[in-house]
Image 1: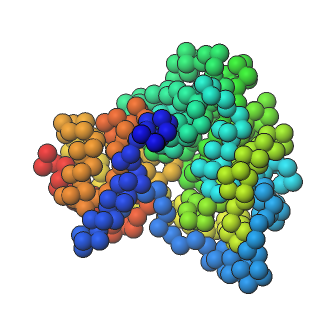
Image 2 (image 1 turned 90 degrees about the vertical axis):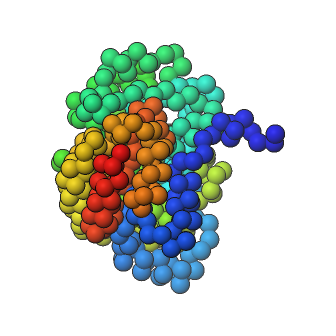
Length: 388
């Protein structure tokens, strides 16, 4: 009776609950292959780890500038221009946050009032919905379908726009489906945003993980920089999930409000983690390229294996490091399939429902695991699923 209405409406049993359940099962001695967490299995770059040690020895353990330490903002600006052609001033157009989720939260708090509508393309990262409950805005899903190759229907998007629509939220490469918005789709989105005077939040946390060539950010399209907020993180690109370093790239007038929201949630990002991240941004290009190349090889291998499982429908991911197969041919819900795979195949996945209506009938499998684990997972899945 004491729990707030918004938290009573928040779903449980999702990614982190599954992770906790799997850990308890594993503690009994059962071997599991963890494919529920989008966590690269690479150790963070050595140069970043050494930089943290040096930072600690220098006594850099106190509050920092709310927007992030100047060397980190400078390193971020240089890396974004070098690798993605994004030009932002380190002085007033970058805000460093405690991970990308806090970056998103800071953006939503800064720009949305209760009842505002945000259009998102499903399937989508589950935190979007949970943050909509936390911050009292309405998340409006435009359902994309695997049967349509996750193609964006611009006419359907236009039909969803109402006087309450304030923002479009995009995520490319997409978690969980692995699709990448095409350049022409981004151009059409940009035209709609400008026509209806909408903000765009572009979640580009998987920007380095493209297997179809260089990515284009919607912020680089003419007339979009002034209405786009780009959210990124060190978690995936540098395998620094536990460091909790995220950031927002946006016009200076936006950043001062984002910083205000951020400082009232976490004050500042962890000081020594920021100084370690400086080195990752400055000297980590080779690390990124090697990891992405490795994941592309793993994805190709796992795709070949999953394609040979009777009844499983899949598309090859264009980016990120997830498979999002359809499992409806087995006559069971995604929750039942997840339980069966956990108990009988030792494979931990996530029900697609937690990624919006578009995820119904799917499961998500993160393939950022070793080749040996992928081979074992595919073998076990084939045995279990084909028995159904």
